[in-house]
Image (tube, rainbow, N blue to C red; front, side):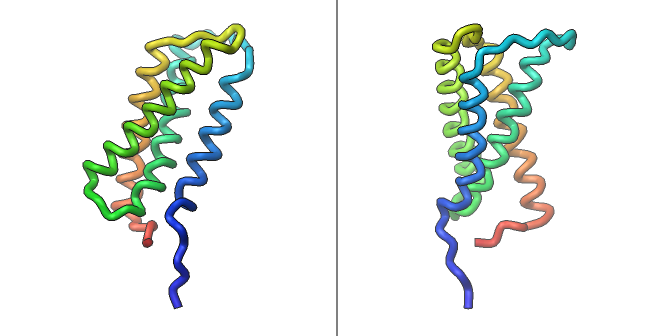
Length: 126
């Protein structure tokens, strides 16, 4: 007997992860690190993980790889813009276009990393 799992369950990891991003973005802090573009690297990985987790949610739908990419990219892009706008209201935080660019590149890389894992392992069976 096959147990039917609701599709929204596959979006829960990305939902919880974005809540963590939003929570951390609401904190006022300034870190001095002597690595060039360190904050951009953080944005890249942060949203790369989000792109990966959103891919998990969208890959349960029976649609083309192109459509899955568009869904992941636009959903995560909206979340990235919301995160940057949110920072306008947090003391000591600013909205930066380069942060958003790092977010978008991270989303793309996160999606394609997921695709590589998916094609290699086929571990999502819905």
